[in-house]
Structure formats: C-alpha cells, structure tokens
Image (cartoon, rainbow, N blue to C red; front, side, top):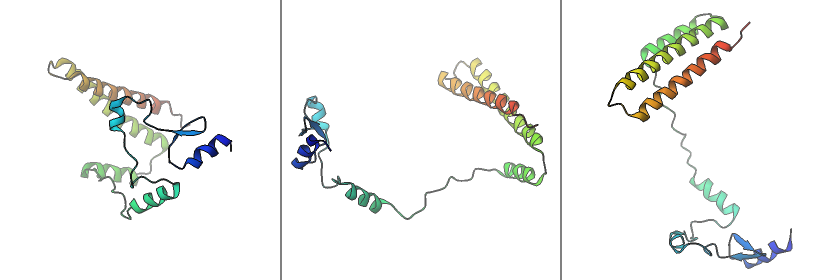
Length: 149
C-alpha cells in the first residue's frame, strides 16, 4: 500500500477525503449553505465495516416480505384453469397469446383515439396510453415473429 495512505490512516479522525496523503475536512470548499446542511457523524453512524454489518443484521427482521395480493378475478381464474387443463400445442398457445395481445392493443388504440377527440383529456394521459399501445404493438410483432416450426 502506498505510504500516503499510511499517513492518512494514522490520523484516525475518520475523514474520507484526502489530499497529499492527509485527511481533509469534508466541508472544505463547500458553499456555506451546504455546510449547514451537512450531517455530522454521530453515534448511529458506524466507523468500521464490522459495525456496519452488525447494524444491518440488527435491523433485519425475521418477518417475511409481504407478497403481492393476487388480483385475479373469477373470470380470469376460470380462463387460466381452462388453459391449464387443455392440451395445446406451442402454436396454439402462441395464437391464444396473440389474440389477447391484439385485444389489449385495440383497446389501447381506441382509448387513445377517444382521448384525442376529448378537449378535456390531459396530454400526459394520452401519451401514456399511446406508449402502452406502442409497447403492445411491439409485443405482438415480436410474438408473431417467433418461429415454432
């Protein structure tokens, strides 16, 4: 390790900025308003890696992360169950997926057209729906390009 790191570490003041091997005040050359906002190192800030790891382990709870609530309606569950029961080929699965994506794409295109005619529609909403319609179109094109033969 270079000698200038040794000099800086011997200071032991915990500074993280160095110039020519010696620690520098981290607030040096800051605008006065920024210096007022600077956080002082307190007892809750670990000074070593082992203290940081111990702090992180102490803050971890044994509770499992909450899972996303299942938002499947009865209709969706029925359709998914039916798809699972059917013995379909990959080409048939592709046709089912294409049909659903086309339906979503048409729905988004219709909403965009209606919003464009509506004088009260917000521009950012129109853009959001148009972007989603474009994404669905790209998804459809990609799905159509999958060769299953």
